[in-house]
Every structure is written in C-alpha cells, then in structure tokens.
Length: 320
Length: 278
Image (tube, rainbow over all chains, first blue to last red; front, side):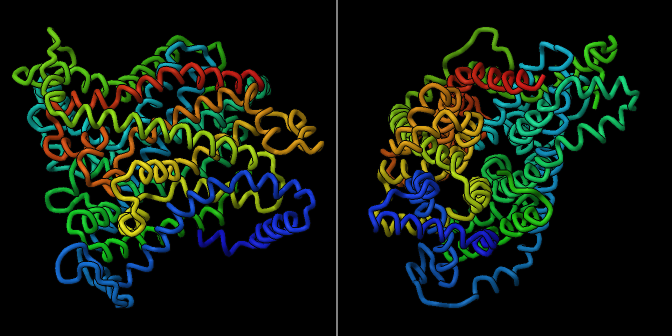
C-alpha cells in the first residue's frame, strides 16, 4: 500500500475526487469518471474500516505495552519501538523468519505456482486433445481450492496421522514401516497441505492464459517445422509470462500470511520447527494475549507484504 | 508445450496424459473421499475410504451437542446476509471500475488484488482491539460487515473482469443520455453479467461460510458461534478423529452444493473463452 500512495498516479485520484466535489457543489452533471468512481464508495468505506483502519491501528498499538491480562492489561502508554527491539533480540524470531522463507518457497513458489503451472499445462493439453478427464481434473483442483483452510488442515491431519492415517496404512500394506509424518516432518506436512489448496488460483490463471492461444497458431508453428522447444519459447512462454509474475506475487503474499492450515496440522511443531511469523503473531496475540507484541509482528508482516508488492511493481505489469 | 501435438497424439502420449489426469483427480479429490468415508465409519473400525455398512454414529454424537444446530443456524444467517451484501457492492463497484477510464485505474485494480492478498495476520490483532472499542463484538452486524469487507476486494475485481467482456456500446448510450450510472449498471447486469453474478454470489457465500478467524476475533458468546468456529474448536482437540470428520462433512456440505451448482457455469464460461479464440 505504501507503494501505491507514493506512486505518481496519486494526483489523478485526488483530481478525480476534486472534480466529484466541484460537480456536486456547482450543481453541474458530474463528470463521467467521477460518476463511475462513485460506484466504488460503499466498498471503499467497508474496506477502509476493516482493512486500512486495523493496519494503521496495528502500527499505533505496537508502540504500547498493551496486553489483555496481567500488569499491562489495557495499558496504552507510549513505549516507542520497544516491542520491535524485543522481537529482534528474540533468537527464536530468526528461526521463525527462516521457517517462513522455507514455507513460502515450498508452498507458494514450488507448490502453488509450480504445481499450478504444471496442472495448467496438463489440463490445457488434455482439453486440446479432447481428453474427457480434463474437466474432472479441473474440478478436483477447484474443489480443493475452495476447501476452507481449517478443514484442509483437519483432512491432512487425518491422512498423515501416525496410527490411523491413510498414508501409513497404505505404506504398511506394501510392507513399509510407518512414519511419524507430523512429528518428524512438520514443515513438509504443512507445505504439502497448504500447496494442495493453493494450486487452484495459479492453475485457473495459467489455464485461462494458455487457452487464449488459438489452435491455428500451434498448428502453423508445427507446419513451419518449429521444434517443440522453440514453439514453447516463442508461443507458450510469452502467453504465460505476463500473468506469471502476478501469480507469483499473489501466492507469495498469501502464503506469508497464511497460518490456519499450519495451526490445525502442527500448531507450529513440538519444537517450533514449522512456526512461521504469521502463526507466531496468532499465538502471541490469541494464546498469550500479548496484543501489542502481536501487533508489532503483524506490522512486520505488512512490511514484508509491501516489499513483495514493490518488487512486483519493478518487474511485473499491473493488469488493467 | 506438448499442446503442439494437436489431435494426432500418439497412443503412448495419450496414455501418459490420462495417467497424469487420474493422478491429479486422486491427489485433489481423494482426501475428500477419505474424510467422507471416515465420517461414516464407526469409531471401532477406524477411518477408512469405504465403510462397508455406513454408520451414522459420528453424526449422532455431533448433533447430540446442542451447539451444532445453533452454529448451523448462525452460519446460515451470517453467510446469507454476507452473500447479498457482498454481491451487491461488488457488482456495483466492479461495474464502475470496468467502465471508468482514468490514469489511476491501474492503481485501484492493483490495490484490490493487494488487499485480497493482504493477510488477515496483518489486521487480526488490531481488529480484535478495535472491535471491542467500537462495540462490534458479539453482534451479527459486526461479523457480517467485517466478512463482507474481507471478500469485497477479490469479488469486486472478479465482477470487473466479467463486465470487461461486455461491450461498452451496450451501456454507454444510457450514461451519455444522462439516465444515470445506476440505470446503465442494471441494464448490463441483468442479461449479460448473469454468469458472473452467480459465480460472485457463490464465492461470496463460500468465503463467508468458511471464515473462522473473524468469528474467533469478534465473537466470545457461545450462542453466537458459527459452524466454522465450532469445527475449529473441535479440531484443535482431536484433529484426526471420526467425529471431527462428521462435523467436517457438515461444514463442507454447503460449499460442495455451491461448487456443484457453479461447476457447469465455470466450465461453460471457460469453454466460451476458448470458443472465441479457436
């Protein structure tokens, strides 16, 4: 958001508002631009109350010692950056940052974006060759995509359970020893479960991009004798590249803040091996009720989100 | 990449494609069947894919808890209200955003996508503190408004993409002759944007029905709990248990119904996308 308010286009927004104001004042018919923008007002009000205000409020309370219980309950005394200093001095925090990077690389970059791209290639190819299963596969991925995160965590907890889980009973049937997946590989378990439900977004966007390539373009390239690789480079890649950066940004930001699947599946792991920053914020604020400290962590997450958005603005293209 | 092969795909390639598609269906669909199977098996047998004789015992346990019925009722009320409100505001704002032409438009579109991605982890702590100060705690009103706000960025963007496909000439005449934006919006909305409206409403419902974090933040009164929260609380105690699987089936059922209703629409929409280019 910081990137947006500093962008050169900001004055256009302001001038649009000005013309809206002048229009009503003089009793003239509003300019078409401001009339169209007016349709966004109800949504903007709700978004301001429930997104912008809490984000600003988080910054404000992160400079207080506020807790829900104990000696500092309800305290709004100004303590500056003490919460952030505590955070940086905490050796565990570095570990949670590391965990977050591993989790985001695994779930967003490899799982969601890579997996989504692979699925999109498969489904697009299947559709072009008239494979009947294409629709079913698309639907299965979509269904996983709208599965609530908490339910996703519960389903995968059932699959990966040491004693009664699907995976271990399947493995014992072919003579393999059971593995304590959630205990020994908590991060891997969380990445798999999180990827499972976030493949859909990338898959939909990539499939839509691939389907826009007309059939005759491929055919012409084939008649011209282009190798498979050169067809891929000159036709397929340019079709998916514009949306690729956007998908990568969205999945990365979504994964950075996602923690419900993790909470249900491992709750951060027995020795915090899968505790990410977002999950840490949740634990601090809603298990320990250290509100101000939790707010400080959420401000850090906001900063990371802003960084990803800035990087995207440098390399990607904003969709019209 | 392999799409270059067209229809003259070799038998072995076709076999491989089918194999991979089956794998995708199993990996993404299988876990749901596992939950369903487990929910209908008695606790002595342990979770399984296929209960020989389906047992309703887990569901009996779930409904013996009188919180379940209450939570279901609350969820229906809240999700219905959110669906109506969010669909209305998203389709109105999406229309304006699709038709407006000014240099800051990209900023708004990007901002919506960013707001959609901005994690609840950023806002949840402050929302928890703010809500108690603004008397939004333990009210349907607070939950409905908050949930609507959470889903609006994505839904508005989605509706915009549907309006973008409607030719401007259709509604431009209306706005030019001064009958107003609202009239032009309704003119486009009713006939042309119908699949978009249905998909948006369906997603609004799914998002509202699924939402658990806002209920944790905004509700402490057990009488105001939702099925999502009830599920979360139970899962925290015994994630892999079959009773939780039964509760999960109840939690998922409405999502599944909406999904099945929308499936045809979505694939028809994609087919049209394809038809227009092939």
